[in-house]
Image (tube, rainbow, N blue to C red; front, side, top):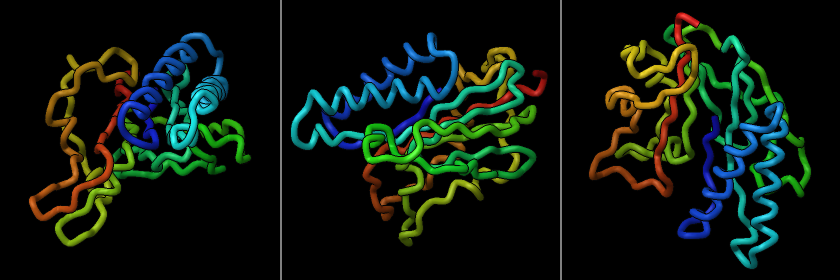
Length: 208
């Protein structure tokens, strides 16, 4: 799986998103391991930058690229400058901080680690929650930034089995209540955020 935020707006940003998604789908099917997938994404952005001039040539994207072991007990995660994801289990929300921080995709030419991958235990019923930068940039009417940890550090609603594929992390069609439970509260007095707010929760089935 992958979640990310691209720099900029308009058609240039849309084009970069499409290029990254195409590269990800191709690499995920044919590359043997996660670092190779991340390198392909980096190469795709570098190629796009080389074809553009001006501001478009300064494109980059934060991203999290993740996979699980065959038995789904181990989560492997590459974080390229993206907001830290959370592992939610047993009423706790634990930030999965990378051991070695790395730059966003498209900035590898500035140095830093190539494609570091961290491994975490993924317990049955554990939920990996990733989100875009707009989530933590949201503010309440007092100007306080939204913190997803307290909202997640409680028992999540049960998701009906019909929404799960057996022994996988995929959610082909999540019910509305599970999709929106973590939406930052908004009011007419809230300040608007500069980017979209997206949560992507993925849970390991308890019978896997």
